[in-house]
Image (cartoon, rainbow, N blue to C red):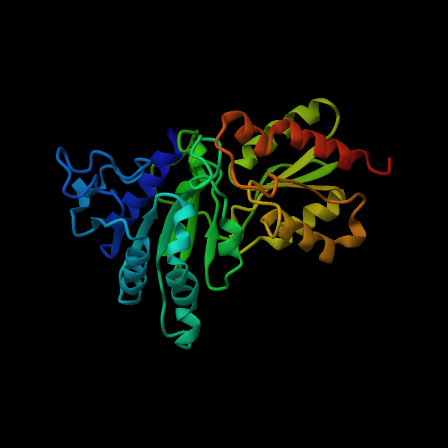
Length: 337
């Protein structure tokens, strides 16, 4: 199977769906290379190169540059989705979605329910998140818990190239608004990705590793760090299961509870802020529905409740690390023994 980067996998997903369905359109800032700029159009393909090449194949009526007004083009996409198109919107950084919360939270998320199930909103909002690239506090946040909180939205957090392609195709074919969050650090990660189109269903966690001592649940880029920690711990005699939920809404509660009950010892690794984050949500789920199986307190490995720092040393200290995950697992594993 060919090796491809996450960026290539996402580009393929968009191309497959635009070839399959003429109603799929792409819009956002500089997704076609910068309207009005001198030089070759489509030279850039968005801030991270994901849409590169689509303008030449599908034309400017389906790959559209927009002004720097996220509220306007997210609102336009919601309207387009209600009238039969399947827009895929690119927002450069999730930090900017604050200016279009009304269009997402109070409009698109509610259309199906306000109109008695007679309206659908097949809109995908792709955006980047996460620290580690030296992009400072206004371009580095991990905000998927905010969108997970809103009923009517589906929220996707891929961790590898294979899942990125299959989940994006599933998102474009879905009839509800989907927030699709891509960690900037994994764009160049390589993995096996089929050439053909395929889907990865929402609400089905990926079981990356099975062990009997501790269950680790990690999201997005944290999955890779957790896998490194689990490998090291296995050499030391501690066998971990590792789950990647892949989507936070819907969340695969059954698989999470099954593995939590099996080991009775759980560590949740999340790049989002600790207060009201996914780590807190998953820990609460296990405490409520699998309390009797627990043999140790659940440990959350997250950043501190503070803005993402710009200084490289502070940014590295802010993020969860392989070492912090290993320490958490050892603490949970040793509790009560």
